[in-house]
Image 1 (tube, rainbow, N blue to C red):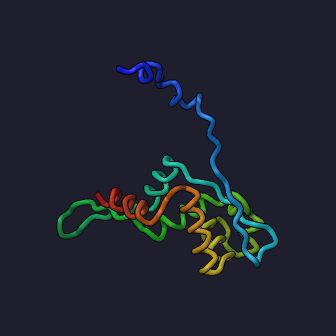
Image 2: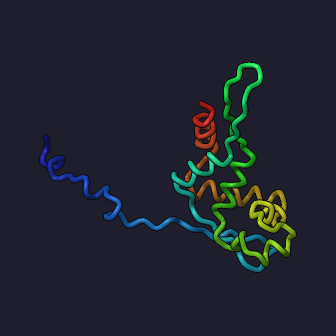
Image 3: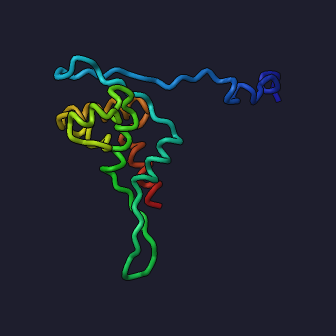
Length: 143
């Protein structure tokens, strides 16, 4: 072992020794006077979102329980979870758009299709997810 390797310590990887603040970013759209604020999504959150987007059903032919991931729902959950401002669970905001108790519906009502695509892209970039990573996540869930 070299002297350099002997001096290395696992302590630099301990959670309490890490200076980590989740990244945030402002995303402005011309129609709104204030920007949306998004945050990166953690691995733990991704796991939870995948579970929420996974549907189980019994295959009538085999009797086996099969799991499939609803990609559209997963994407909507991902973007919605990332939005810090405006707070999509705000009662006044939801009431304004007629989407009570529906943060996903609120975001979909607020944004045009192109804006939703742009916001989704920014969320993916901020969280370090590219299309190849997303495909890998999907393939992993399918297994």
